[in-house]
Image (cartoon, rainbow, N blue to C red; front, side, top):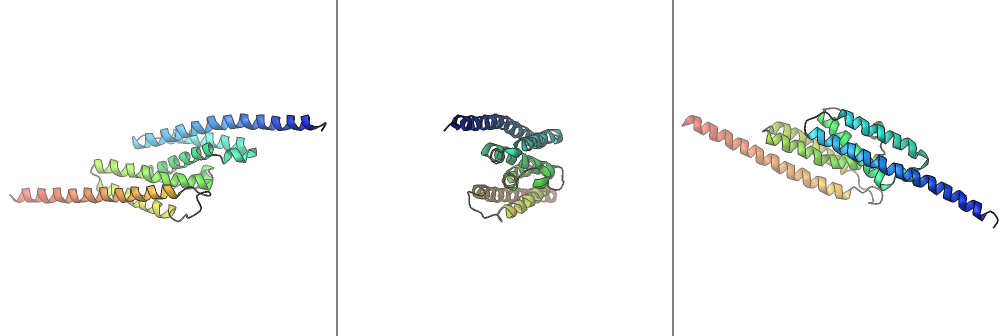
Length: 205
């Protein structure tokens, strides 16, 4: 028992270090979430979000480096949520820029938060659809709907236990969003055709 105090001190030192790292991770994760959300907001305003997204990616890279010896924190809820938000922002940005989607390893994001971010990005693409419809750009809206449907089909491939990938609720939400968006576009197309018929009729009178 002579070494019990020494053992306790060693454990305390390790936990103190982990607690310090955890606090840093919390602040970093919040910064990533804030930057990612800001990037998406800028995109929907038609502004360039490249710098904001790059800053978020740099913050995530620093966090990943810090947590190499603390994998339990790297996979914890708050960090995972932040990486999910970052993946969503990067995906939406690439679609807005008409670029290829970045892969998880290119972003430095693990597969699971990337997949969840992909699922959430369907909702952001719907906003592109609604913006296009307000401008009367039905063809553009249909293009975005096609993207939504393709992304939905991809996320539906993943049928794993909830404890492994918590995606089922997101799949249900995505299905609802796709169906709702399809209905919005159908209504817009019908309205456009009706307007064309009215215009044609007025020309004949």
